[in-house]
Length: 245
Image (cartoon, rainbow, N blue to C red; front, side, top):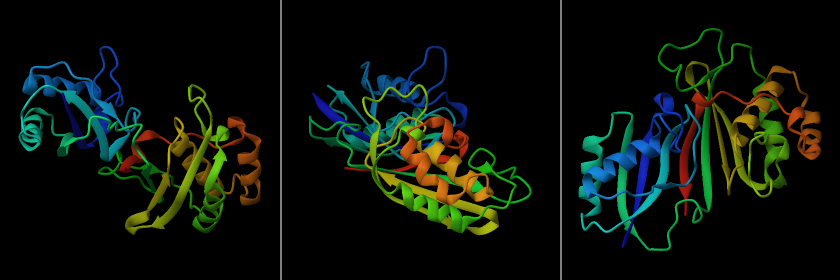
């Protein structure tokens, strides 16, 4: 039995997320169907992160076990030939039997794009969150530093989050101003709770709007109360950028 690791890029706009759902198009289900055509096997594809509907990936990692003797590069080319244009296998490699794309991950980096200007974008509407109010970026950057470190992130988890515990470690959080009104937020952590990145972005945006003061941010973290944090930022601005092993 061989263990195959895939590096995947996808646009999540037309999918109900990564994980297979009955009667709905998903990234996992689409790729598994194509692998079956190539190998003749019903495989289970395990991902580093189960991204939500509308969320994109630049560097999703997944793995599956197979009896097939097809070389990884040939498998990559064959799967890509069958996949729709919004899903691409960037690389395929045989890895050790004990590799698990989720459990073996050491860190993940997510990118979130905010379009901060008075008018939206016809081109980037599926890849960013349009916020028309002028944001105080310096205040957002200051607040983001409060998130660094190992903390209980209960205030930044979805109500349906089923994690065993809510302590996670954030390694870095940057906010960069780009051309044409774009803000690029990047957060790196060892692991994340469900909707954690989007809730952090939503809360930092509320700070940027002046709805929450920077000095109140630590209180929100310490309270471990989701009701005190900001809104969950919409999914289309979120990208799984990279997974480290």
